[in-house]
Image (cartoon, rainbow, N blue to C red; front, side, top):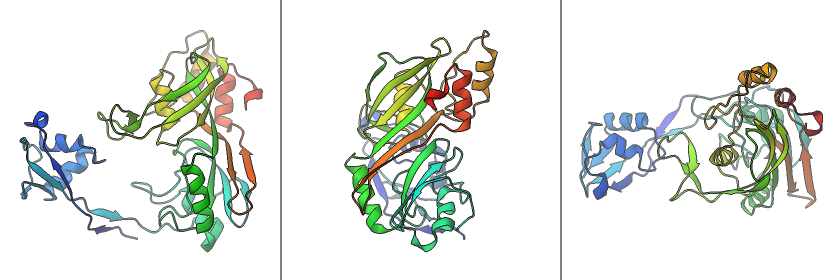
Length: 330
């Protein structure tokens, strides 16, 4: 299905004194619009930007103090996802919900550049018309999400009542969610809390970061399960008190223990020449070493608390063993 441009309400911004003289495209990219600089440049060239009610088509225009800048962003209407016969690892299913053990590499719902092959496409095939539509046409039944390269447990609602009930539990933070992560270094202390508001990075709008102003409060409880590879790495359990985008990846990186294999927030560390097996395993690990291990919630119909557990997938098991871990932590 072809995408269609829809009209949206324009956003108006005022140029502050300290921003006077900045390029229009660069200033807009730093103005919390959640738009990349390339997208902003395209909008300017398309005549979607006005400065003091005058249409501007020059991205290099220098803004002046007090100017009013209006941005009109046409919204792309998403194509309706199609059912696709994609295998799913189902941990639990009834008439109200389904719990999936998502494989790494699977996107949860269609988006820019990912029109199909997602968990939503697989669920539409598996569940048929029973799947809840409350999450929108691109996210039917989706209550929460996991990053593409994060494996593990995710719950999906099959009807609106279940969706509302589960969403309320996420909002009130009564959902139990723990993750296993392989990180660089060994956290000190061995357990504790990581806090800090998470929002878009001011340096790279495609990344999240702990921000001094704005953002949303975030809290991650962690504990070290085992030290690995002569304390060059560790297996850590993270329990989410909040659920912000990339929360564990951002928080662990903020305390200088980024996830092994993380292509966005990671910073490669040396294993050392004394352990070729561990070094090869890390080099060949192509995703962030993060797995949604447990998921607990109150069933939306019966009220019974349900708890599910998913062992580490094969790739993380192999990496853990190569780093000196054992099967007790699978």
